[in-house]
Image 1 (cartoon, rainbow, N blue to C red):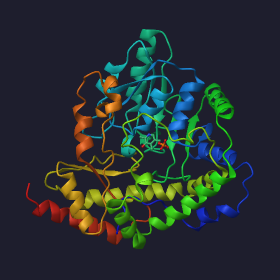
Image 2: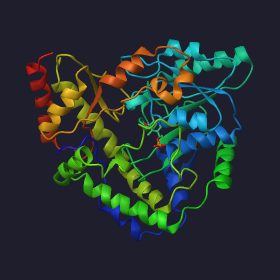
Image 3: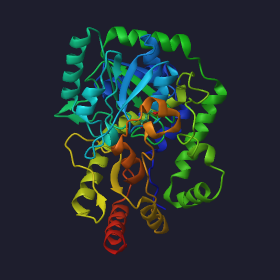
Image 4: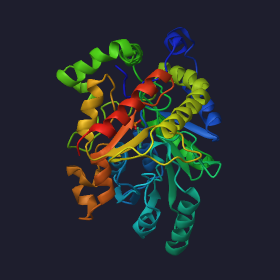
Length: 407
Ligand SMILES: *Cc1c(COP(=O)(O)O)cnc(C)c1O
C-alpha cells in the first residue's frame, strides 16, 4: 500500500544509537539555526512546548493571541494552557492561510502575539502581516510579538525571503509526520538575543532531563516507524489502524479528543537520541525540499481540471509539506483510493472554533472557510521516497475517479 506519508529515514538515522551523545542537543540547535537562517535555536520535546515556553518566558498572561481558525490543534492548546486567549481568523480558499483583511480586523488593544502560519508550506504575505502589526503597535502603544508557525513550512519563501525570521521568532514541529523529524521534538528560533536568552533560561529551569528509559523508548519508536512505513508492510499497518483498536493510542489520540491538553511529557527536554536523528535529517533537508517541489510540479502538470475537485495553488517559494485537494465527497474518494492500495490523508480534518472546547473563543462567529476545509480537505502522498510509478498510479486513479463517479 502507498502510505499517505512516509518519513525519509535511512541507515544514518538508525546508526545514531552508536554515536556520541555529548552536547547532542546543543549541536542540533546550532545546525538547525544555521540551516534555517536564524541566529538562535532552542530545542523542545514538541513544537507546542516551544510556543508554550515562549508565551511563558515573556510572561504573557491573559493576552490575545491571533491565530488561524484552520490550524493544528496544538497552537490554541499552547495558547490556552499558557493562560492566554486564542483569537481565531478564518482562512482563504486559495492558499488556506489566514485572510489578511480578517487578520487586520482581529487585532484589538489586548492583542500581544500574532501567529502567521504558513499552512501546507504556502508562505503568507509576511510584508502585509508586518505592516499591519507595526500599524497596530503605533495605534495601541505597545509591542506585538510575531511568531511564525513554520511547522509546515521550514524555509518557505515569500518573494524570495524566508518566512522563518520575518518576525520575533518561529516555531517548528519535528514529529514523524513533518518535513524533517527528530522522532518527536520541536524548535523555537529567533534572531533576538533577549528573547533567545529568556526562552532558553525558561526551558532550562522548567524542562527536566529525560530519563534513560525514555530515550530508549524513543529509539525503539523510530525503528518501529521505519518498519511500519515500508510500503510492503504498510498494508498490514493500515489494516491494524482501520479495522482494529491496537494502534488507536498512536494514531487517533492526537487531536480528536474533547479536552484542551498536552501530552504528559511536554515538560521533558528533547532527548539526545532525538537530537542526533534531527542532525542526520538536517543534512537531507535540501534533497527532501526539492523532491517535494518536484512531486508537486508533477501533480500540477498531470492533474488537469479534475471534476468536483479544487486543486491547490502553484506558488513560488512554497515547500508543499502537503499537496492538498478539496472535494465534497471526501469519504468516497478516500475509500476508492484505499481499495486501490493508496492511502490519502485528510489533513486538517477539524476547525478549531468548531471544536467543542473552543466554542467560547469562537464568539459565535461563523468561520465558514475553516469549516468547509475541515470537511473537504484531502492530501495526496508527497514525500522523498515516493516512487515515480506511484505518482503515475495516484494521478491516473484520480483522473479515473473524476471521470467516472456520479456526483
Ligand atoms: C505539527 C504542528 C505544530 C507543532 O506540533 P507538535 O506536535 O507540538 O510538534 C504546530 N503547528 C502546526 C500547524 C503543526 O502542523
